Length: 123
Image (cartoon, rainbow, N blue to C red; front, side, top):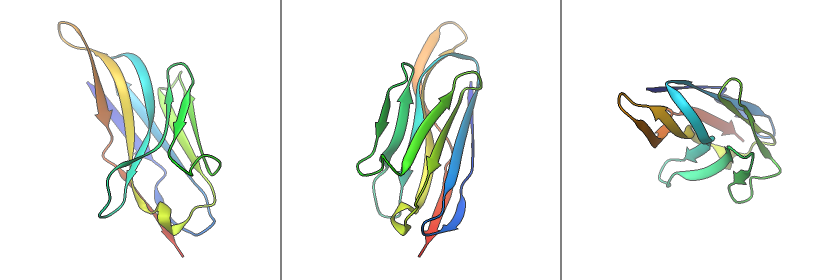
């Protein structure tokens, strides 16, 4: 019902930048929120940034100012601009969505997750 395509991950050096993008497609009725979470080895998954249908944003602790979330409603896409990257940012980044979809007989609202894209920042 929903396909999420993530792009932009890779290996960079400290201080460099990356831009992650996630595009949602499928039988979508309404996207309520989109964004990114990340998970480093041995740690719990944590919020990076999200943007909701009203345009409000939410950032993880200490990330606002380096990271910027944005959306393109016409393309059902969310992007994350990551600047001044640090080794501590190394993690698998997962696209997060909260979406209402057209089910076969009714509307359904649920969370959907991307497969994850690796971001590695070397010192």
